[in-house]
Image (cartoon, rainbow, N blue to C red; front, side):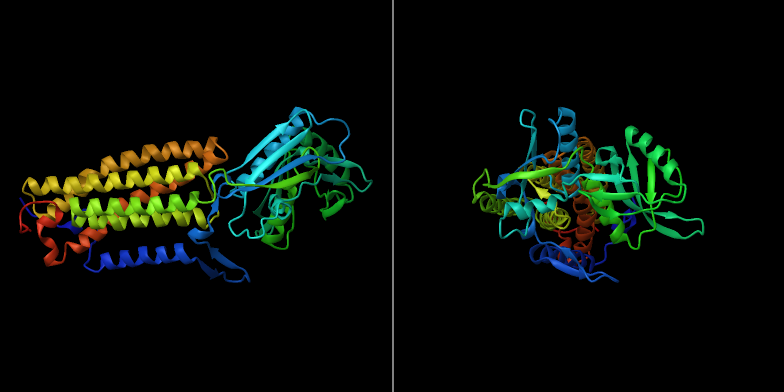
Length: 443
């Protein structure tokens, strides 16, 4: 039988590859510890890569804010449907801000909405009133014609988003797109039909203050309107956010706000961090003692997976809850499992008399289907949770999905590159280092 080269399996493993991959992992580790600010071409603001110390933790771990909102300048009592619509807007707003740990409850008897959410990662003052500013405007949004008549309100707006279109000259143009519900569609069609004569202005106001004054050029009957031109993408995003923020059935005001203590106590985070570090060390010791060189590679693989998960949570400022931590633990467990499967396959190949080169190639190839099948099924479950879930369920689904993706990248690809690289060094070709009892390699 002809000898198989490890490189012929589709992975080029040069002697220096291990050191390159290890350097990348160490750089990512340093960034996860210290953070990094990167300049953006053409902008004064820096891209902030937050460190693990700046992760936004959930209420149960770090505490947060409780605010009671009530309708402002609203005649009569708010209906259950109106309160539910307001709650949905607040929930969507928090999803967009990656505030995944929150409680939003409705008191129909008093017509109030109680909102609980965690502090921001860099919060030092712990001022509830200032923390509420993160949720955005709670004012009433109105579209007003030149006669002062309210055409539609925020209750008629489904969403607003910034984007690009190609105009008649073939140039790209920044716009804000409005999507209206059926009620708003009918009222907006009637108003634009009337106002397009003379290209009259339709003001967009929040609590009477004008935030935009677009001219009506056409009759809009499909419930989708474009506001253009916008001078910059930042202006378009700002206007879209204000319109989306005002998509409420009535204006809301915070009638009270207070701080919430962490339900697990102040020392819970330190205990969890210590437990995680001890568990990682014990796992690495077991892998080193039992699997030797593949165990050494597994330690690097798991380190890369953990660092990648922490960066994927800290950089976009995803809220990390207890459920999210459970997702991380589950994905790391799958990472350990993947490395154990691969190491055992390599041992079996060596025991069956294969050369080291063939054992490495066959070990990875034959373990691949088991690892991929496990990751794919869990990834599907995580995606379903993220699509249909909200709040802390999103935190669990997100951390789990990121973990299994990184498991595939580090547990299969990075591990294969690193062990293939080290196997090029003659002192490291002793099959005892790979779990076999023989002292010399056949290859």
